[in-house]
Image (cartoon, rainbow, N blue to C red; front, side, top):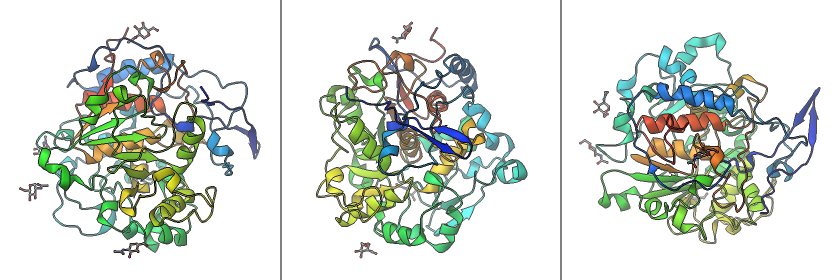
Length: 481
Ligand SMILES: *[C@@H]1O[C@H](CO)[C@@H](O)[C@H](O)[C@H]1NC(C)=O
Ligand SMILES: *[C@@H]1O[C@H](CO)[C@@H](O)[C@H](O)[C@H]1NC(C)=O
Ligand SMILES: *[C@@H]1O[C@H](CO)[C@@H](O)[C@H](O)[C@H]1NC(C)=O
Ligand SMILES: *[C@@H]1O[C@H](CO)[C@@H](O)[C@H](O)[C@H]1NC(C)=O
């Protein structure tokens, strides 16, 4: 209980519009579903090698049928929006029936771009610093039809792969239809070396998680300068200590979806080299189903505060803490930079919504700067543009739309691990499961405009069928009647 997901709060007028702010995101479950405990059989179904489009179609139609329910009668506000920052740029409304977008129709790169698959993921031999490139995407050529806020140009770094895994994602991806979307060298993480006037000018064009819009240069310098060690530059920074066990890096990425309830995946999850979790990841009492280790915890300051508030009753006490745990910020505002700096320097947050808070409360007394990481805004924008280009980008909600926190986590694993198993992510039978695995009674998944969970669901199916991830499911798409 105590999951007060839909707090009725209020509405806000902006210009002539009445923007309805809905809870939602709350913990932006990328992982959510309604339902009833299903049979706990199968597990991972075999990835099929057939073209992903075949199955994307039925999935699509299903999406149409499932179209989200009409807006609730009472406007609701996400807990995050009540905490000091009333962000007019964050109106959240249930997604209208425009959600038929599938990954397939969002691949301008596949259709228009020169084939640069040869260069995908090739191992760079040296680090040549950073540069911004347009890697032959159709988008620039699209010119007038591509709104400037899209910004399909990213910093590129030559970073050698951490392994030579013979059966990894890097090897497989160029044999799939998804190859056109992958770019080599977009930095997953940002760190001290990325802050320059030039980069600030470039990234200031993009608001929220997609750039540095609205964040002062001074703030960036002061905060990102603490992320100055090599551990801050690598998502899997301790691989050299683990590599003796394998030539391939195996990652378990754990969403919070209800499909995990009674799934008995715990041992399997903990058996991976790395275990990723996000937001309201409640472990205690659920170890049999979700495992107990956490190497990477992904969150925004906003979603963390929401989780602490909304899921306390279900047992969420804060981010997991262990010797191997790293904290990966998905920065959305300057409050993320400020909390990160406070955590790294063992000081209280100097200003903003978290002013005066002691970061030890969230990350423990022993957290060091080496345990902290931050996603690069170019990476988030790249994911949005190339993997999750929702139709929401063609609406007035374009500035608040972004991939969900769970989607960013899973796609970050896809870009850094050799093998990825995804658990607790949304599947086509999501209505059979509650929103989260720790809910005692059924809560349906909510759909809101700041994320496109149906598009994410389609992407997971596509990646699974292409053999790039193993998605934990009860039903194979196409088999469901
Ligand atoms: C999901 O629910 C539908 C109908 O509600 C049912 O037909 C189907 O068998 C369920 N699937 C699972 C895996 O429980
Ligand atoms: C991968 O192979 C290349 C070429 O043999 C080698 O130079 C590189 O060090 C290897 N990388 C790792 C991480 O083993
Ligand atoms: C895919 O990439 C791997 C490793 O870079 C390479 O060995 C292989 O030939 C590529 N396959 C195709 C079809 O390009
Ligand atoms: C990294 O930043 C910390 C905190 O600002 C500072 O104490 C340290 O000297 C810096 N290290 C390097 C190598 O710049």
